[in-house]
Length: 310
Image (cartoon, rainbow, N blue to C red; front, side, top):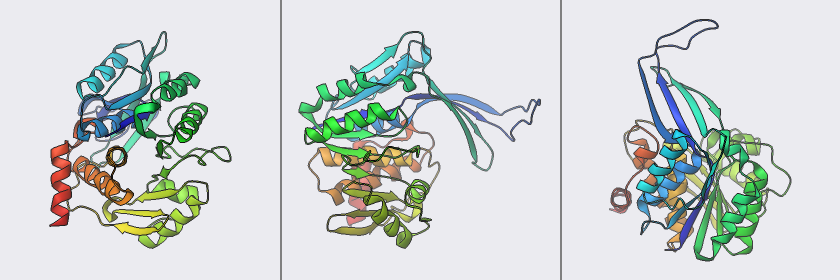
C-alpha cells in the first residue's frame, strides 16, 4: 500500500446535549457536556489509519494552535497510528473548535471557530509536495483556505497522485478549482447545491453527478445515506446499495467513507472496490456514537464487506 496524505481541518468538538436551545438573554441548562477530537481532516485521517496496512502510512497535514486542544488532537492522531510529523503548531493562535448543541430528537446546531485551521497556507502545500514520492492518494476537503488546498491538489496531480476531494463545506470556488481532482465525493445536500439539481434518490443523484463532472473532475461519487451511493465515472454509472446496519449517529459518515475510499485506492483496488471499502467504513461508523472514536477497524470493515458478497 502507498501512503495516504490527508490535508484538512482539525477541530476539538465541544458538545452540549440539551433539552432546548436558550433564547436571547436566557440560560437553559444542558444535560451533558463532553469533548471529542473532530474536524473533517482529522476524521478522515483516523478512518484511513484504522484500516491501513501499517502504522504511519497515513499522514496528517494541517495546523493546530499551541494550546491544550491542539496537544490533545495531535496525541489522539498519533495514538491511532497517524503520522503527525507534518502537523504544525501555530504560536499565539487557538486551535479550531466546534461548539455543538444536540437536541433530544438528534437535531444539532454547530458553531465552528476555525482558529489555526484558517492560517493554513502554502506551507501546507509544500509539506504535501515533500511527501508525494511515497503517496498514492491525497484526501482533501474545503475547511481550510482554498489557495492552500488548490496548490496541494495541483502538486499531487502533477506527481500522478490520485486526489479525492470532499467538497464540504460547499463554498464558492474559482473556475478550474476541480480540474486536477480525480474523485469528488459530495453528499446529497452538497451535490444539490453544486449541480442545481435537487438530489432525493438514485435517478436525481445520477443527473447531479453528471452535471458535477462537467466542473472538471474525472469521477463523482454522491453519498446518499441510507440509499447508498451513486458513482459516475468513465464507463461506470452505478448505484452502490447500502449495508444493512442500525444507524446510531451519522455525523462522520462521509469522513469514514472518504477514509476507506482513499485506503482502497492507495492499496491498488479498482475504483468500484475502493468505493465499497468506503461504504463499509461509513456503515461501521454510523452504527455507533461519535466521530473519530466511531471509525471501524480493518477487521470490522473487511468483515462487513465479506458479508455483502455472501
